[in-house]
Image 1 (cartoon, helix red, strand yellow):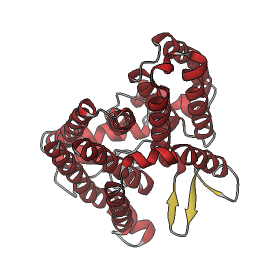
Image 2: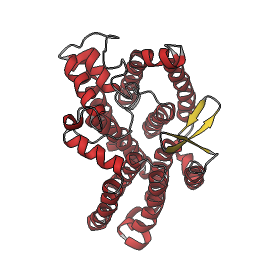
Image 3: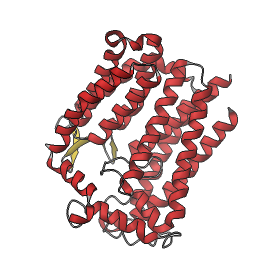
Image 4: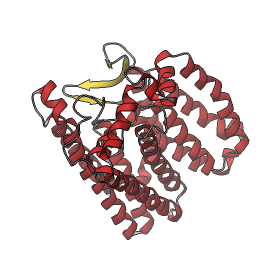
Length: 362
């Protein structure tokens, strides 16, 4: 699988390189006004890239099977962090959400850590249970209780987007492990009223849904972000207005360097640049699927499935939100959007995937 590993590493490096360029392009004006340094976000992005590279090299050098010994402690550590981040004075609040720990100039988002640790925990759990996952009481329910607790703590931040992502990753892993379809479908049906309550009874989420249906009806209010995103994508045409020449990043499009960086790519590099990004993600997922198909170790198989599901779903949701196909969710575009925790843990996830492939060749 050496050629697959080389292609995945090359694709990831291309996405990261794309991200470095676009983070600087999309954030320079904003950073200059508020931080008096056009390179403020770029420098921080490069710092997290360095941290992610060091941690990824460490993961590549260690046999991934050793993670099974730390699956439960990592899960306990994650739950403790998700509880502590909700405590005033410990967790950092911003725009009504309490999702970060602040260590000097660095912010750490435990929900990003949870994506990796939950995947590791479930992979170990499913590998140990083997065929017993078809049993509701001995297999399915214990896994769902842990997933439910993690999702509940993330929703309390509040962060419904990452909670849904975590739940989706868990459902995919349970499905591929052979869990009964009726157990999964019953759980989804039971979750729908809760999801309805979390959306309809929370005003700002309901406004996002109405804005998604028709952003132009309230283009200066709830639909402002989506309408500005569509203006950016439409302005780029086929080949774009040119790198660094975006108009929407001039304080028109909020979160231009984070959640809506794809819209700036579309404006500056056009349909061609946007398609390049989309095709790179498709290639990454397909190559990851080739590793999954060739992995014989159950733990490695589930871990690889979870990693591909995590990165693929994040990319799908971010792209869907940017083009107006999905309601607004605060999920960054993997490897490209500015966001330290997400970049570091996504890089670590790819390193784990490469490690699984390498171990299968030995």
